[in-house]
Length: 118
Image (spheres, rainbow, N blue to C red):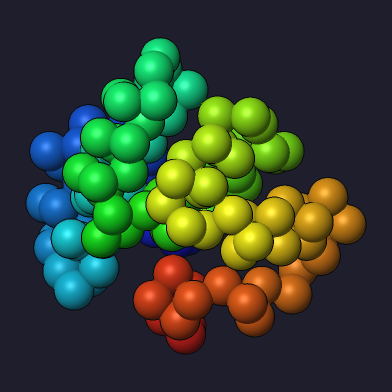
């Protein structure tokens, strides 16, 4: 997710190119998906739109929600709505509690979401 943090201001179409140039092509699909979908959650107006969003982004909904949470710095109702629809409510609340406590222990974060060791 560190890569998403670094690249989230880039145009989504540039993310893959930048990661490939840096020799990090294996991270490109996940990072590009998160960056592309980032920032759209709060714009969903109806439950139908929210459910469509969950379905469309189900393959990477967990890292996307985690990124939204950390980016905003606190949970919002729209994040909780998507977490509930995606079956991630308890995990989301655990992340929110860790964030509120200022914890840096993110061991509960799925392996696929953690940055590769330096």
